[in-house]
Structures are given as C-alpha cells and as structure tokens.
Image (cartoon, rainbow, N blue to C red; front, side, top):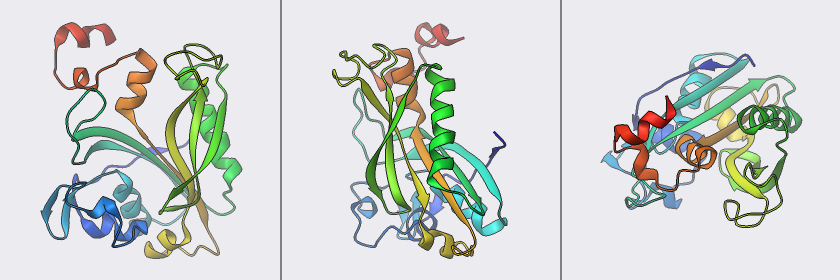
Length: 217
C-alpha cells in the first residue's frame, strides 16, 4: 500500500511525546504514575507517535509511514498489562486525504489480518492528536459476529484507535492544515497477537519459553 517503515528513539523528549501531539499540560498521561521519566523533559516514550512527529518535521508531504516499536508505561505486570509492550502506528499526509481514505485503508488491513469475511465499524472517541477520532472494531474471528466468550458475546472486538490528524499537530510540525490533511492510527501488537492466536496471558510473549515460542515458527 506504499507505506515505508520509520523508527525513532525509545528515550524521547517530552515535547515530542506530548506537546507536539497536542496533549495538554494537565493530561493524566503526563503524571509520574503513568509515564517513566528520566528527567523532567525526557521520558521513555509511551507510544510511537513521536516518530510521526519527527518524520513530519524532517520531511515534506506526501508522507505514508508505519512506525513500529517498543513503548513503555507504568503498568503493573499481569495477564493483560506490562510496563513494556509493542505498538504499530501509521500516518498518511497528503492533499485531499479524508476519513474515507482512513476507513478504506483499515478495512483492507483487517480483512488481510483476520480474513476476507471480516467486517469493521468505527465508534466516535477522543484523542488529542486526532479530530475526528474513532476506535475501530472488527467482527469476532471466532464466532463471525454471532457472539461468544472471546468477544464477550458482542460479536465485535476493538483492535485500534484512529482519526484525522489534528490541525494543531500539523502546525506544530510545520505543515499547513489548509493545504494538507491526513490520518493516523495506532494499535497494540501484543494485544492483536493475543486476539488472533487465542493467547490469554501477555506474560507468555516476554518469558522466552521455547515451548511456547516454537508454536509460531
């Protein structure tokens, strides 16, 4: 689909992790209980979105990138949480990009990942770096949307967040929002892996038990 891979530092300036992404000063994500701080203005990145900021500041549109990598948050270790996990985010910036481009791209992604029979739906949400914002659900790959314990009998599974890049983010990165628009999306790779392969404990992905890992050769 024309995307290139972009990577960036895991130890990041707070301005790239928060300020340039339109996250307000009083947002809870900036608190010590949510984010690992190295210094007052240096953090372990909580998402791979700073990579998008760096690309937008260093390159001119059109842009079409995927930014995968490790991210860090102050979570207790249990079956569904870890202080280190993996994300994959995507960004498209060009003239005339609309929400329909976002929905078409992600619908195709879902069909390639879970099967051609997969349906998608988008629910309104709030993210500070996109407007409008949405969360995307896919029909449960186990029951096909009928309802089962995997999808809590809803027929749907939430897999990612997305939206149109907020004009403020474009301005922070030196891109004129009156000329360009774009969309962004982000997903937890560990969560999608758990959903796709029926893994019920996140810790299995990090313990390096060869008996477990050998199943996925």
